[in-house]
Image 1: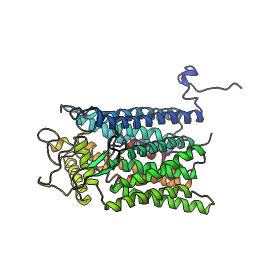
Image 2: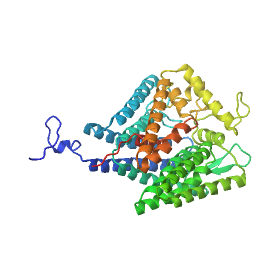
Image 3: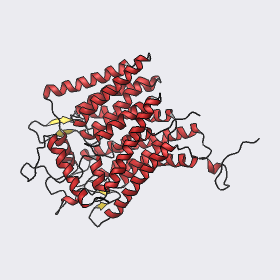
Image 4: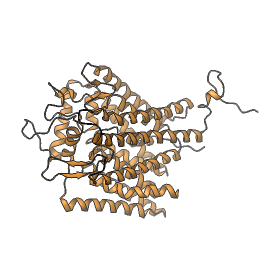
Length: 471
């Protein structure tokens, strides 16, 4: 009997290549599209860092849109993968449930977008605020597209291929972070003000040590699990090479996220190593490199005096680098202690709570967090901020409480699926994804999304919802 092929509406076989795509062809296509997308994110982030320091003057803020453009490319390519999977009807109930949660979030974000359309100068709800971060509706929508593309994957080797590329990016990020301590390096480096003796911290292409800590936490987790379990010699070497510098710079960001992440990742990896030893498997080299990186970073920090610089980093990024915050002044009413994390986060969260009280359902609008705090020229009000450094409160203030609930549901649903998959599946990618998903679900209380880092996080959340199949 002659082999038949599926067609749509009686069209030709060639025009229906998606329906007749084999699992292996889909896997290769997805790998290529994700790699191109994440390469665009990394390259655009690096370009923005160089341009912000070397070419454009302070009067021109347009360099800030570059990472968002790279993210949009990744989002479009990613949602193409989801569309293919949807047409081929390969999605499982678990993946469909994740997609429905994402759809609910998209609906609430769109309602906020419609509500946020206004005549404010230099503000577009879709692109974002020009004198802020250019993170309007396009940015969170791209995160969601990446998530949808990621949940559509059905082969372990597809995720492994993307993780290998992610580990390579971590290696390049580490090199960039190291070069930032050389004054002549054209990339951005952090010399934190607001303290008697300014200190230099790595920021990589993330734009801020606080954001680099999130990126390094995810990258280190993927790299150390990959080095322990990926048997391909060349790629295993890339994973292994990324472990030591990623662990060092994770801690050297000297942020609360960096410190907590180092402890959580170490515990997760040692737990996995203990189980592997019971099964006769070993992964001592990656763990040794990770512990060495942690020890070197903590030793370097302790020599100069242990400190947590969240407040100084947040204000330097928002005010000094982007001009999206008002100046910090100790003489303004309601001023907090910028050196105390017990002061800085409650102050920022209170800003979000004020907006939520006025716009509980629709939110104030995409990338419009700053507007409710200003009565005159934007950014001129001392202590004004454009984000609360809590992902959940940021979504509640920007897109409304229903959107924040949807976001939390998406995070918790993905993390729970990751835990279940890691417990019942031998694939190491679930162990790595689960660790990152659980860690970020908790860390989202004290961090905000950014176009330079968050795309990788949403991809990992999506992999927690994958169902791997054989040919």
